[in-house]
Length: 468
Image 1 (cartoon, rainbow, N blue to C red):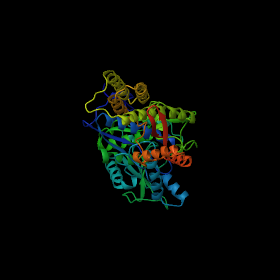
Image 2: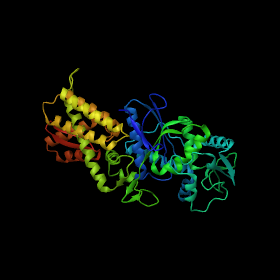
Image 3: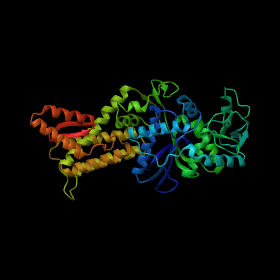
Image 4: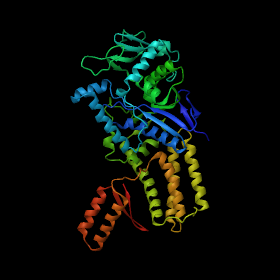
């Protein structure tokens, strides 16, 4: 089965054919770094991380670009509130963002270009649009001339008449048409600015992504992703800008994840219900949050709540426990060189792998892919219950799980704060303390291990440990 992606542009699933065999150019709109990430922001980050992981797992070299909007009205207001500079605000929240993506089990992007480092690219892009008649200066600002771009509205399926009818606010008299949008904003007194042919100012929001995507990925990219809220106006404006300049499609596939809701309300900071990822991470592990996000298809709305996270935590722990137990049995006895897994288990693992891939290739159907992971859990537990299971079977089980987990990342890679050897030494010391009835020391080591995130478990094969 060929990989199929639901393309927002065509409103249908399409076979994925990259521009260049074996390579994927992927751009996902990044954060405006004026505050901490809320849980609604985490959904596209996890969704498109998983998309990238899957593409890599089936052999693609993915160039994955996510930008930082590090100057705009929100950062200017935040800098005023904090009595600091826009640059310092950006640094604070870029660091916080990077901490959060690590805490969500998300791999870094190939590159995170910043608006403030891309001014020449942006200014040159606007100049080229102006030269082609798609941009005009008015009152110190530069606007995009939407009437000149015949396909404006094609992504969101809106036309200019509908857009004009929907305008209820007072129209800027400097615009030729109400739906024209700003490419360059003249600086107000005291604001941060950059020099340009139109005077001191800074970019509008939409132009930055067009300029950076073109610079780092080319005129046309394979996949452009983001939340459904970006479909209009942001992505629509990107299409208009880039395609007016290049005469080529901006992206061959447009992907949009649905909203994350609290109750019946869209998750947003303006509603005051934007729970912060940094706080949620204090209670729930990366695997739990990822399980919660991926247990619903990315194009369906997802309701957020404590009960949903607790349920996800139990499910993620079942998976982690089975994987940990298989690894433990394999550590007790490694398979002999050349030993093969049993035919029955091999066949069952092939069925599970086939199901996993067929679901992921169906527009990244992660809920059903997780079902395949639970089929693996059932098979693993059956093997663990049988004392006659050969080491080669455990090796095959672990290999199959690792392939699926590399995509979903429900069980994070082992923490590197303490080595296995250090943990084993502490456990051995605790065991000796208990033998000599040095209960105080045994309790002290137990508390230390707990603080390190180490869980001790008694099994039929003896004491084992795992990380929380």
